[in-house]
Length: 407
Ligand code: G
Ligand code: G
Ligand code: MN
Image 1: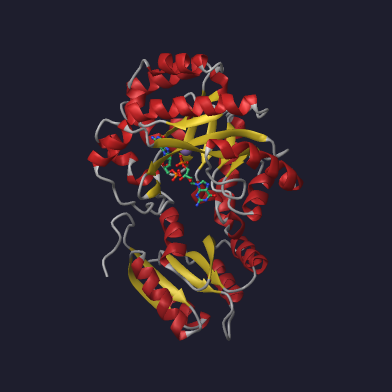
Image 2: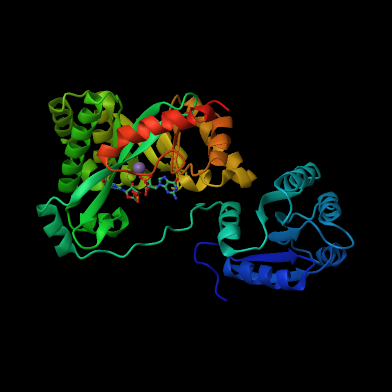
């Protein structure tokens, strides 16, 4: 089985009492790029093997509940013997037991990469392994099927692209903190099409700037309309690299915002790191000018790039949006909580507003709230929706979820 191109080749061990589970573990580790997987059925067997080896193993996956020497005893042994292996704990047990085992192992000096629930899968192990090797945490997002460029051109002429809006709320009081405009194609026969199928095509064919201006126009119109209906909020739009290359963009946006009777403070621009560092000179000029004019500037998908932290220090951001890979399901993964804590603390130090993306459940909410995140966005709060549904959403949300605030 070939190793993954983005994971260095590594040697692994699986310590697991059940033969079938052990085979699954071996298979999954190879899928994740292990060049060699040593199997051990008991702690005694694993220790005997480790003693015969001069080079430390890179990674081992260790079950906690085994006959004979249990996982806790085994971890104590390898800690005291300074075996140097990094461990992923695998267990079907309750999260608090796993957490206790993790703390115990750390106190013996064992490096714990993270914990996973059994059964093992590539999806669970790979993010931990990538992180261990200091690489991006994100499994590449599934590529959507691209729509033909001619269909897209025709649809632009027919004005079939429109923004949906996903709300963001302040975690301390649940009040609305803004909405993000997300492009949708209202296709006459195929229904609603997601951006993954047309944005990359637009970007590759010089169409994105034109469509983005139309989207901004529609978003501003919606924003004024909500205000008339008593909902005072701000709106954010995602910009591609093409738009940032245009150093007159701040002027154009200023005019559009003013024509809608709004202030730049009510409008935020979201850019990803890739966008911000492509054509750095022009991008920095545009971004700095946007901030000078009073627009909000958001660092989108924070944490998934290669040098996120460095970019933070050179770009004039006002907000960071923590990517959903760190947020969704964080309650079940200590490693994600640790990363979230670090990002949120850093945002506070830099006086940036922190926004957690991908808050899907109340558990996700509780985790990011406890870590001191300012704002949350995600399906738990509200999915992207058409402009005319936002006010109704707002009343429902304030009516039903105010109680989760501040917990
Ligand atoms: O809306 P989701 O709902 O599926 O959006 C998927 C991706 O498409 C996100 O990464 C989002 O940033 C991007 N996206 C959505 N709308 C726009 C847009 O108007 N312009 C650009 N450049 N990207 C967008
Ligand atoms: O611009 P950005 O890449 O951050 O776009 C956000 C994307 O995340 C959009 O595709 C949006 O539909 C999606 N999204 C928003 N909230 C959630 C959520 O709670 N869960 C998941 N899986 N996706 C979400
Ligand atoms: Mn975004």
